[in-house]
Image (cartoon, rainbow, N blue to C red; front, side, top):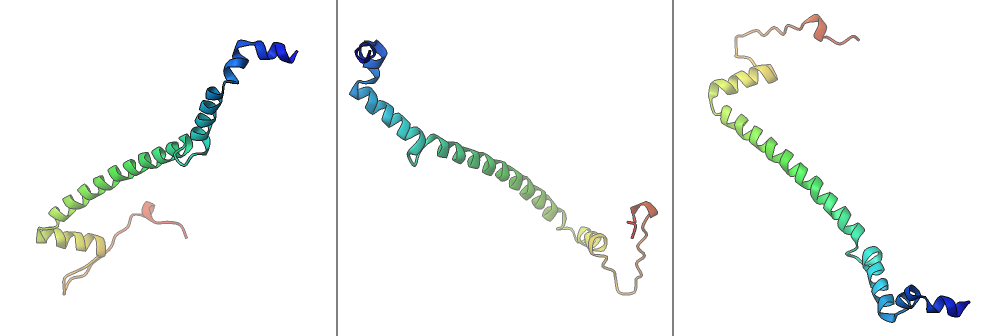
Length: 106
């Protein structure tokens, strides 16, 4: 029975030493090597996420550049300071009016 199995064409092909070496090499490179498929896949995912964050930060830089260009005007700086930080001139009173629906329940 063992001799019948050894006579089959695919068994002779797989038992060839070159095929065995090739199979070992492919398995080693695919699973165990430092440059394996799984490591490449993980690195490609990292590259993709970094490219997405790069695009996001480039958009943020463009927004900030536009804001800085807008703030070159002294009237815009004053307007921004009054709205954002509630700054006022020396003899001036500021009243903050809030709508009832914008208040949170306490």
